[in-house]
Image (tube, protein in one colour):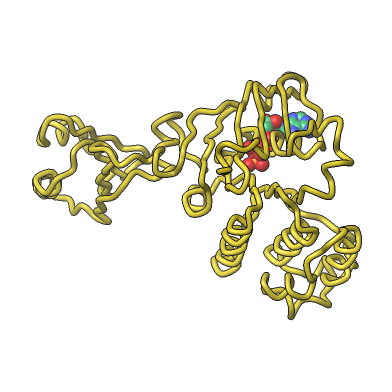
Length: 311
Ligand SMILES: Nc1ncnc2c1ncn2[C@@H]1O[C@H](COP(=O)(O)OP(=O)(O)OP(=O)(O)O)[C@@H](O)[C@H]1O
């Protein structure tokens, strides 16, 4: 049976969570198919962590339904614990515990754990294995927290901002590990506000803003390679007359300046458009810098949908 036709690993429908006057999650629905990676992408305060914590059984919902591996986490937290790995945002541990002790402690609770030494090695933590938690760098603490989430061979893992604060090398290690989990049939739900992380890792992306889903699909679908999907960007003097530039371009081209000095053209981008842009800039006595033609990114999708930047 394919992953698509089997029961979902996580099924959330019409989820609502309020904190006083704040509606953190406002009717959110998502479905994580078994053996796939879903990225919940959105800016700070969008409701990602709250959604994940409800799925983990750490918070109670106000409305909606949640099914995790076929069970309601609000009533079946005990049954789910050995089957689900959790990497909370910011991690956390006793400050004096050494990295290898902490992982061994978590491994001891699992029926059939992975080898802690192997996991430390894969995550580049072998040299730091005797370092007390509080002396590990932020990125090392994050990786240890990930090791703890995985050591029990979970069927499903929740990773809340798994690479926040990591250097590019450590981020790459985590990305490779997530790829390996997926290849092993583990289901992964991760949150991020790094769109390149979602593009790199996710089979399915759910973009959330203010507690609601504003778009969902595969990274490819969201940044669809239609005629309009190409974009031309360049940097130049802020606040140039974009309507005048638009008039110099073929019909159907749109121009805006999302942030001062950053110009974005969408529509059919062909060699004539590129030449018209540079000619128009030359007439204004400005050099079009960092001129780039490429596919829309998830960041652009978010900007189009909400009028705001992801971060
Ligand atoms: N325990 C709480 N009490 C009060 N308000 C809360 C609580 N937890 C979250 N919120 C509020 O709910 C909203 C959603 O927060 P949440 O942490 O779920 O967002 P997020 O998308 O994970 O953001 P971030 O990327 O910053 O972690 C925010 O307005 C936040 O301030």
